[in-house]
Length: 586
Image (tube, rainbow, N blue to C red; front, side):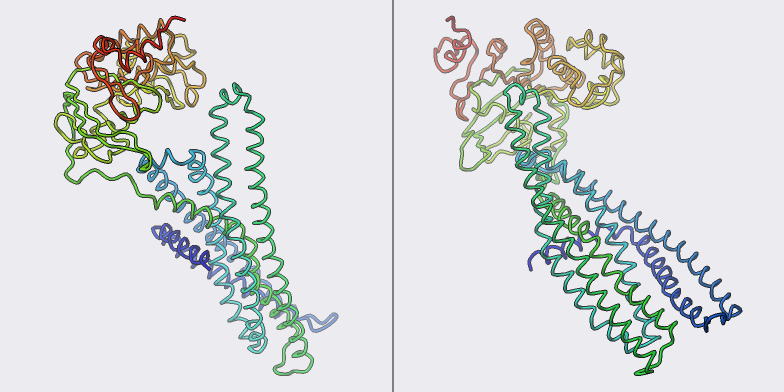
């Protein structure tokens, strides 16, 4: 079956992650051999002790006591090596999944934004958190059962052969039936576990979206529909989860049934040998030892099928992780890529073509020439491509055709990091992380002093409200600044850019969430900040870009007009209609 092939490939990849920890694996294997060998030696000692019981009031205590002392010693030493094996397998498991989680997170950081934008963020979070945990559980169970199981099977076979080769052959002949049952059920359950993990990721994505947009949900009275959608996804998760658990739960009782058949066959055949002496005589103690070995021989099969649920879930989770790791990373910088430094801010866009979907054209044959220190405003209706230009300038996306140059350097020929350091960007959607106000402002400059942070906050007109917070600049704000107003969050984002003091600016509706009075103050600060710096301003409120050196008017991916505010109004064209529509008197 195809799925079994996928399992083998996933197993090989997981083993490659465990390879750096081969020393612990070897020590775990040695500990397993010693532990199981001593455990298997116990039934022989018990059998000998039984044979020293001749009858009522006829016990050879002198011969039995040394046997019991030896038995106690083997139990203690076996327990010590059992602990050592568990310690080693835990180290291997947790170090392996630690490396896997780190590599997955690093991979996400290298993926192009196209991939991030095209996948539910909650699903990606679920892969890094939940799926890695599932791999950890399955890997831990799998390694433990593998070592103890293989050693137990080989060891019991050797011990049983020393007692009765004939009965050993009977046990071995019946064993494949147990393996067949377990393998058959495993193939049935794999698809269910894959579907279960995928549905769990879908549910995580939905919950993350609903919690993040709770205000919008309540505003539009979407609670009922959200609950219905949640119940639908949760119902599918329940259905596939029940099926997966049901099918996997069949494996353990099924293999136990087969193993009990083995036990019964050993007991019956052993009794015949003890009574008739054919084909080889057995003592009562030997039969007792053999029955114990028969149980221990079949125990690994029971244990493996007992943890089949975790192992199958681990494989399904590992497939989802490897799906991320196998995605094509963002195209790396060219080997000879230059580091852009001391940028003046001359930006040239020539014959640029770009679309997110090849079937839907967006930007076609765009040309822009921005001189150092100029202010370029980009306006137009929603969906015309304004923000897309920003994505292309920052190389969040690469153009399909054409070129973008900074100071004469094609941005394809410079490193992304050095390019992005030249820009300070304030977006319409403010982003803050869980940390202090100071840490959020200094996000781009961790070495900034408190005085520099305060100076940046003052320029952004954020200093006064920061002082009113409980601990001032040391106030811890929640994720996304949930304990601040939207305007306050935006002010902190602006202060962050003020601190960076970059040679070029990108302002994407940077003051959209700020009241009119504060906006005027911010515009004054921006005027000072933009002086001598190339600035790209994306705006919907056209009143904010009257002073721009050049206004690019976009519609459906094309620059339909360009000029100053006054010249565009004088034309009475597309821009004039947009401007007048915002200030029309009813």
